[in-house]
Image 1: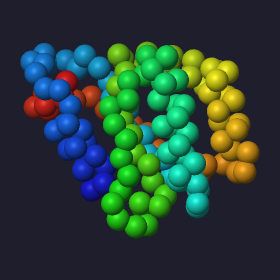
Image 2 (image 1 turned 30 degrees about the vertical axis):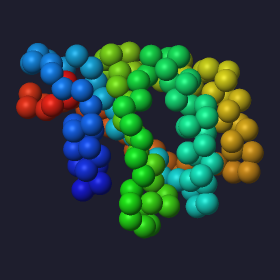
Image 3 (image 1 turned 60 degrees about the vertical axis):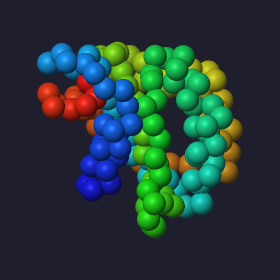
Image 4 (image 1 turned 120 degrees about the horizontal axis):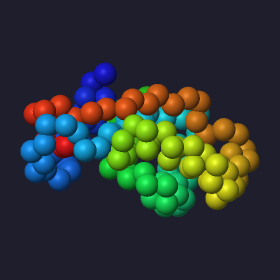
Length: 134
């Protein structure tokens, strides 16, 4: 839980500030990838070299990526946050991403020697009225 709170704090301090609207203009998605043993470098390479560009094509904005500093989480947890126009758009964009032929090829190639991710936790989040991020 403290890791999630820390990621949210970093997000709040590292993004643009300034919206004064009461209702959120975007929805944010926190994703925690629990990585299989020995697969972290391959997963990071997949994101760095391919996934982020495919996200952009599907209207999914990467806010940031984080690795925990301390073991054992530093070896098996990748955290990132996406910004979506709305929850409905997020669901539509995820479906389009999953169906993208480039993503399917990249995933298959990167998992030729076994799955990279054991499981994913994800949460859709709305900024609070007092959040620096809107």
